[in-house]
Length: 78
Image (cartoon, rainbow, N blue to C red; front, side, top):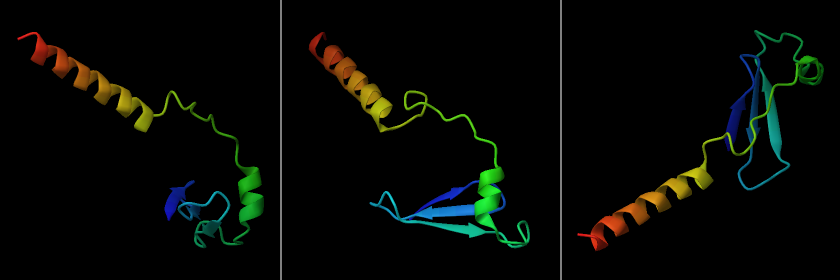
């Protein structure tokens, strides 16, 4: 399960390997009516990072490949 805390009121759990199965939970002390649908509709949209801005496996692979090539060059030019 992957978890996302939207704020101190909402927790969303997503089942691994699935694009559809999500569970949403409300903090009953912060959202006493437990009306998640209306609360989520009332939230302002946030700016979404583009994939290039997010640190992730693609950038990690590029960095590791660069380090590997640098080590190879150092090894062959000794």
